[in-house]
Image 1 (cartoon, rainbow, N blue to C red):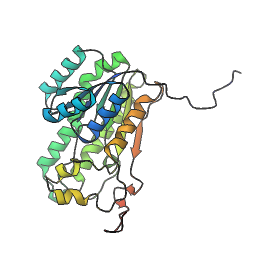
Image 2 (tube, one colour):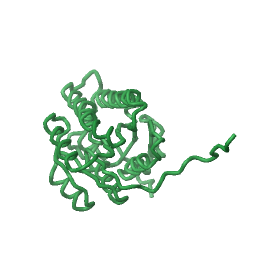
Image 3 (spheres, rainbow, N blue to C red):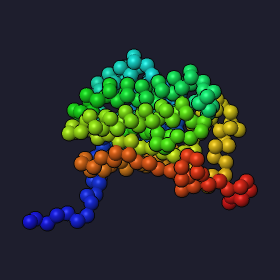
Length: 266
């Protein structure tokens, strides 16, 4: 019998690819754009805020398209503009977010609806629109969910429900595309300290936003998640990273986080 390989295949040096990143105006999205551009990829940054996209583009050399993923017209225009300029090798679906932290029994259902529209319908509006181009390019779909997609926690009902749905739809897509030359990847971060996530969740209340990270020695940073995206995309074509969960060392679960008493850090 011929010798069988005894060690895993190694990722090949990156070949420049054309990659679309949504939610790219700040946080994980902006960090992902920066890291992929540093590796030589042609990146299209997508978000609603043109001023922030301009800053990202100027800093990284990415191109950008202003679009709201909750709008059918915007996504149709996005896909038309991007595909007219060349093939698309990967789409990183990062746009999303949490709104509020009320218990289920006191839920603001309008916020739940907005979270579902953004995290679930918006994500798959983008995925479905780019799928023909990704099939043609033998490309990759990356969906950045959350550890909230894997475990519930008090005060997170609406966000957990949306992220669970996003995760399950991603997994279903993976099943439905098996045998086709498209990879489907879920990346689920735990606590990530970015400038806007918690601030948005708590309606701009900076004290509540800061309290999320109080005493946590080393929450994840946006660049840590960006590296997970880069690594997943860099794997050989036969390797599909189905689900990658990453958390800070201090966080074992959403409800189990080590915190250092005030004044004890450093």
